[in-house]
Image 1 (cartoon, rainbow, N blue to C red):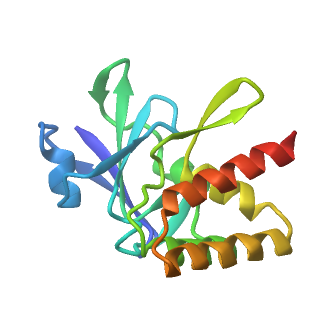
Image 2 (image 1 turned 180 degrees about the vertical axis):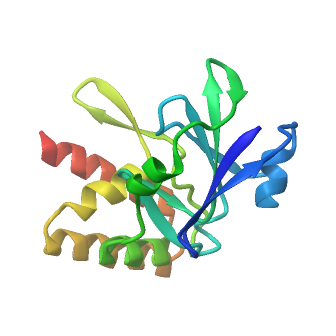
Length: 181
């Protein structure tokens, strides 16, 4: 099966011919903790769920943040298929320029065991919204400098006293939702 790998360190995309078995993705990352992202239409993107705690480099695929290497395969309904996005198109979607806020936040968050994509719920009125750390980082990155500084200062305090980083992130998500109205 044709797969594509993205290496944010070398900024290279490689074509791989893989034999997709039950453990192929786990073997690629040498890890049993894998995140599965569906940003690309009819493709699956796999990343190492340990990449944050291991301080692996970040990049963006469109506006989707990912850390460390990524493995992309095609998806036809529920079945795995050859990746068919042209490498040039994929390259155009990649951005290796990670804003300073992201860099600082990811550096601090690497000291925790929080997952970038694991959903949690916040409420907006009577509606429950599933959000994740990646959304919180995106939202605070577009905020003003004072708000970004507040986020990082408070995160540092949470880490210093060994409080729950996940609870802090939920609190920040709720504040962002409340501010949005």
